[in-house]
Length: 267
Image (cartoon, rainbow, N blue to C red; front, side, top):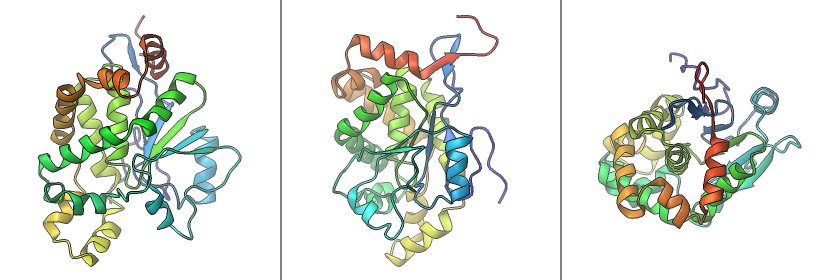
């Protein structure tokens, strides 16, 4: 398997799909998303001590936002949700607190999701937006405070994490195509995880085409989700204001904290 492109991926063997959401151009010609501020990944529950040290000492992560539900975390036993370390604070911010919303369970719930149809993905992501108010607000409150470095994750780092990252990037005017291309990188990030997931899904009786659909992250799924967000909420900023409840001043602070000057450009 060829190595993942770095950046944006960070090669830590015990955590899949780990990458920065930084350096994306924004609607301001001189600003980009901060390069070493927020990372995204699949589950970090199996982190080795070496990789945990790298997360803290090399990436300087101070806060880990866990979007998984209680049933998903319980199923990890005997693994912990996140290895205990005084250097990093784990924040449990479930999108669905008591509902298993792992990719496998979404595939069962949404037939079109499992078959790779865009309609199923948009329905699933609409549910995530509708149910994610408290979860996503906690992350945006942390951004507003402006301290530390964050890692956001769910089980695969694809669906709930992908919707959250869509909001973070969209708020500062990253173009739809750029957000969709970032989302599509998950296909590469999960390549090493797919054999394990495929065996679990086969054991549940899912056909091969359904498995491929469940593990896909095509850019047009995210483009359709962005369009749905515009239709339902007036866009990402409308969602952040009306659903998450941030006012004008807070929105401007959050935007400032998400960006940095593009090297070689003047504000």
